[in-house]
Length: 112
Ligand code: DGP
Image 1: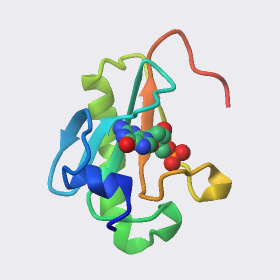
Image 2 (image 1 turned 45 degrees about the vertical axis):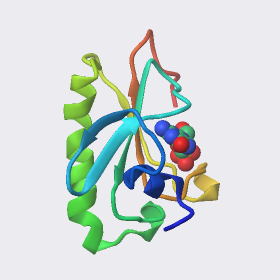
Image 3 (image 1 turned 30 degrees about the vertical axis):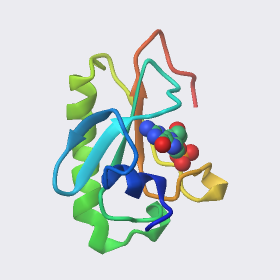
């Protein structure tokens, strides 16, 4: 998607503070962190949101979620972390390229 910010980050056309990369997935620090550590896991291939996923995306989604604890540990989130996927405008999504927020650190996160 030529006008997608995260596709541009994947393509190296926009900078990012990278946490992890493989053939399918990129992880980088969020530009507006809500906690001392806050990074995003995204698929390299453009997928608009979780609402645009079906069975075909299950391996990719599983890979993304399975990476979250590994990367969180590497980022020093030893006491835990929160994962969040905002989906659609009603779900607070602002960038329409699927992403998993992973954040934590500091004293505590607010209760949901
Ligand atoms: P969401 O509301 O779930 O769509 O969150 C989008 C997140 O993406 C938000 O926390 C800020 C982050 N973000 C937006 N643009 C950029 C960018 O250009 N670089 C980085 N690193 N993060 C961005």
